[in-house]
Amino acid sequence: MHLQQWDEAQKHFQLLVALTDHPRLQALGYNALGCIQAVHLQLEQAEYYFRKAHETDPGFADPLNNLKSCKEKRGHMALYFGSAELSCM
Image 1 (tube, rainbow, N blue to C red):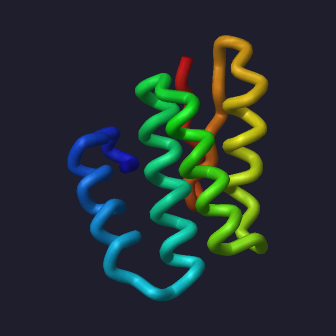
Image 2: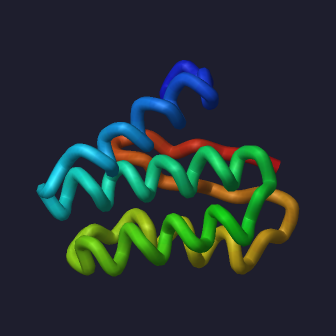
């Protein structure tokens, strides 16, 4: 993810979401998948993943911040993934 190898990251996060029962890990995976979709400007799909992440773990703030950024979409999005901020135009 931090190396911007989006296809490889997507495969790993899809696997994480499918295999874990831990809500925070699932939410992290959904949030990452949302970030990947947003980077590719697939905003409807990104919003779906951010909502799914929030539903899975309502205490995890990053998905709501990312959802807000997608909805504002004024040419530049700041996306939050763990300790890093991803930017895309």
